[in-house]
Image 1: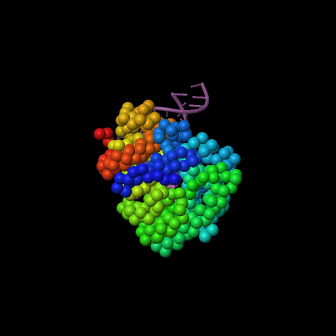
Image 2: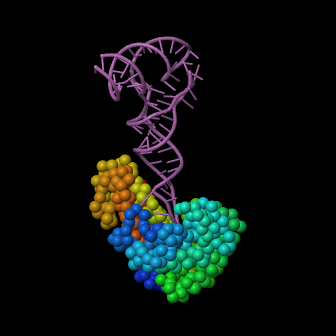
Image 3: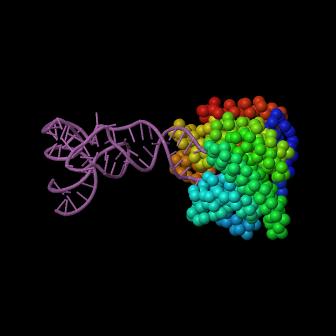
Length: 379
RNA sequence: GUGGGUAUGGCGCAGUUGGCUAGCGCGCCAGAUUGUGGCUCUGGAGGCCGAGGGUUCGAGUCCCUCUAUCCACC
């Protein structure tokens, strides 16, 4: 259940109550695709860096180790030793981004596993069953994430199909939640708005899915190649058409600047691979901008990634040492960068929440945007 | 000391019967990456081809001398 605490302009400060605890919003979910955050980050680390929610992946866990295995192990929470909320992505995006060969039909999608190439079929019911076995806190609807650009006719047909799939997801989820051997009978379901950059398709589709009374609503199919202006414009027009008493989740976004702008347009939930992937690649976020620790200028730099940062990496190690670890391909290098980046994102979300509570989000956003757009040079 | 081999960007190598603006891999330097493949991609810097002399219209490629280095044998 979503509870709005405070509004500052369109920015919302809220709490989302779940059986696995409350989520303070706006929130950035830390991405742990295969039941782990890449870069050797353990769930025991996450409490230290302020992680509220982890995102895991239906598709990845279905192909390995298999959702039935996870269910036998007591569900995702017990499997990965994480007692706070988990959101599972439905596999919709992975089918489109990872699988090479695929055929989209009304019943679902036929595609090949990226692990061993074997044929897999996934449709709304399959995705819901897998997510029910995983027993995540929040399940995402099985949708199609069309590429950018897609022509109008295709986008319309795709968005309509996503609505039909959503209705099937909802029915299947209700059925699964009523079964006695279901681990999490309170599993929540978020629907997904699609429509690309066609605002009328977005709006009509948002109105349709809003009638289904789901636990939350996501905006998908953005940050796939369109300009920032187009993305923000779609948020401007689509968010007001989603239920305002439910959380709004912008899928796969994004940079600190993207998040600051999107919060200002009413978004509550985010997730993105950037902090972890960039961390693995030695790119670290700071209030002076992004730094690439592979750069030679850090070779003998004894300062932490960011002066004054309270993350485990900055409290203990220098840029020069971490650069060496990265160059030597020591796993500790990427681990420290990932921890720093997730801490940076989680901390930024906490700052955002506080700024909204104190009715100064506009001012905060302006100042933070300037900070994160820096060159990475020390002040 | 004798015989043989090899000398080409930081490292390892290609360079066909002399015709190149001297390439390749790794490394290095920088940049991409948005519901995760730790991958991948894109740029860039860096060589008067061991030194000197010759043959030729033309030499990294052929000849001579020297130097360095490796192997074998004394």
